[in-house]
Every structure is written in C-alpha cells, then in structure tokens.
Amino acid sequence: MAIIILSALAITSGGLAIWFEKKGPRRLFCVFKPLTTALIILVAAIAAAPVPPAYKTFILAGLVFSLAGDVALLFPDKGFIAGLAAFLAAHIFYILAFKPAPGRPLSAGILIPFVLYGLLMFRTLAPSLGGLKFPVFIYTSAISVMAWLAASRFVYAGGMRPLLAFAGAVLFLISDSVLAYDRFARKIGPAQIIILGTYFPAQLLISLSI
Image (cartoon, rainbow, N blue to C red; front, side, top):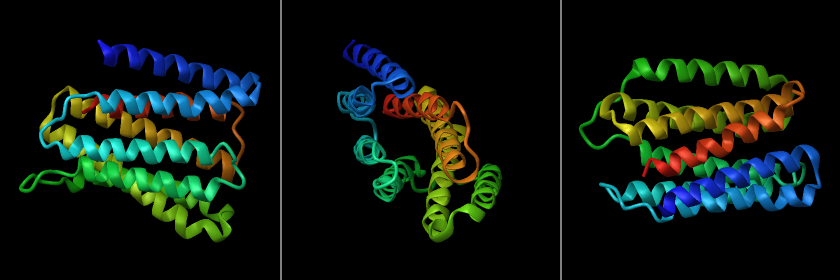
C-alpha cells in the first residue's frame, strides 16, 4: 500500500513539475522536479530486497545520482556538465543492476538496434557538439548499453519486474534523446513536456522493478 501511495504522489508531483515548467512560476518547477525523483527514491527504498539484493542497491544508487542530475540541470547552462556526469553515473549503476548473472547469455542480436540508434543519434548531434563530442559519445554509449541490458534481461528472464525495467530503460532513452536533440540539433516546441513526460515514468518503472 505504501508503494502505491508513494507512486501516486510521484505521478502527481511529476505532473505538477511539467505544468509549472510550462506555465510557471519556475520556482515551483524547481521544487517539484527534484521532489518527484525523491519520491521515486522512496518507492525503491521501501521495496523488499530482491535476489540478488545488489539489484536494489544499484537501482537506489542510480536514482540518487539522477536526483543530483535533476538539481544540476535546474541550471541548464552552468550545471549541464555536472548533470551529464551525474546521469552518466546513474546509467553505470543501472548497467550494474541489469547485467546478467554469471552464466546467463547476452544477445548480440538484441544489441544491434541499440548500437544503431546510438550511432545515429550521435551522428545527428556531432556537428553541434564542439568540445562535448567525447563526453556525449560516452554518455550515448552508456545509455544504449543500459537499454540493451534491460532488454536482454527481459527477453531471457521474462516476468513483470524485468518488463518494468525494460520499459523504463526505453523511456529513459527517449527522454535523453529528445533532450539532446533539442539542446544541440534543433529546438522542439514541446520538448520539455516530452522529456519530463518520459523521464519521470522511466524512473518510476525502474524503481518498481525491484
């Protein structure tokens, strides 16, 4: 019951963050954006420890770094590099959570579409990246690997929780892609609605995968 209540609060808070980002005042957006992620962290924190328990630890670590990234990106110019670093760390922890157990196979066939997508996205952004080409390439690689491992985990393990993690990873990939395209390639009118409207569900689904 507590998880249901916290999830509902997170959804409500996320909706308010999107509303205030669009309509203002910005100070309320600056409250509700990190509050939403904090509520999602609580959802993960009270979940029963899975087998192996390290999965919960890695997901919580990823969410905490995501919260740090949320705060940094409230200052999109000065905080962008810090935000990028925080979310890179988050994806590394998600990779550690989603990686297969020893003896479990990894499918190159599942990897191919994520590699192609990552390369296409980087090629689209590269002309506008300047000195950020290398960090953005590393970040794009990390989130592509994260989504691939979540997909592989679902394909080989099945079940609701791996499905939630896979859905969350795909939504995270969409959110970050729109953010990067809007910042470096071409402005998208409803970009923030799409970014936040996929980002918050992504994090909630990943937290519910514990």
